Amino acid sequence: MEGQNAAVEGRLVRLDYDLADVDGKYATHMVVQHSDCEFTIGFFEVRPPVILGPEQEVEAQLEDMESVSARCVARIVVAQERMLSFIQALQLNYEKFVERKAGQH
Figure 1 (tube, helix red, strand yellow):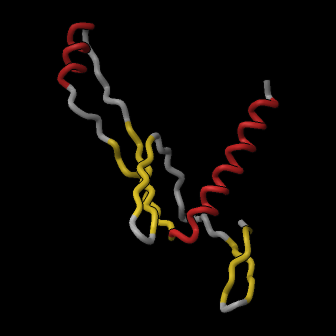
Figure 2 (figure 1 turned 60 degrees about the horizontal axis):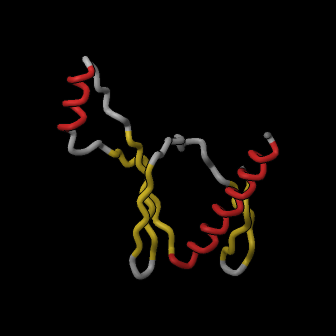
Figure 3 (figure 1 turned 30 degrees about the vertical axis):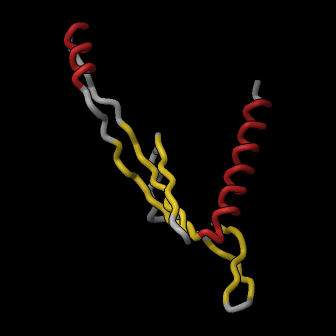
């Protein structure tokens, strides 16, 4: 996958992205944290528990439930200098997504 250019010792070179060994994971929740110099974004998958039985048992199980597990499927750390361009890339892609969805109706 070809992508953007990167500066290497003052010279621009093309980046060839290698995604061969990367599995896509589905994330239902995200947590964003920051320090003085970087942002950490955690992506989590929440799997609803299987609750079976008669209605009264299901209600009791739901009432007794204190939490649901959220498994971290990926974590990225972004330098503060790159965060704005990351946000802009997300925003641009989201706007294109919304435009395409609006055109389908």
